[in-house]
Length: 103
Image (tube, rainbow, N blue to C red; front, top):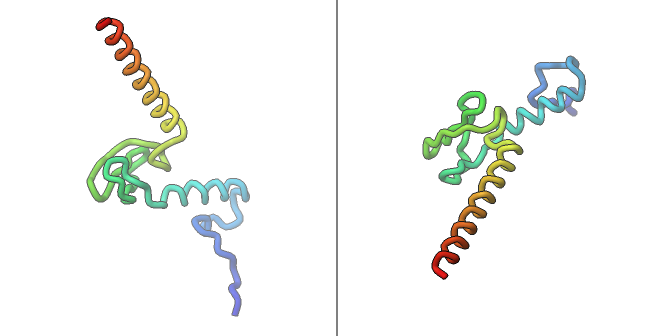
């Protein structure tokens, strides 16, 4: 016998309410929240959300902040990249100054 109903995932309790677009967004957010995430310290896929924006690795116990539904946000990734680039520029500038002083 075939199935009578379609699988609806996390929105099974919502039924026909709230519209298709809102339910699709809800599914996307919840699946991203529930997937295993990689720990930035030990590298294992054991990170779970403790509360809104607080994430904890169940292997090494490392607690860190991130997004409400993901450990890293797009804005956080961009900020980290910019900060890393700024540090590299500062190091290069300091090396150039040191070379000028020795000459």
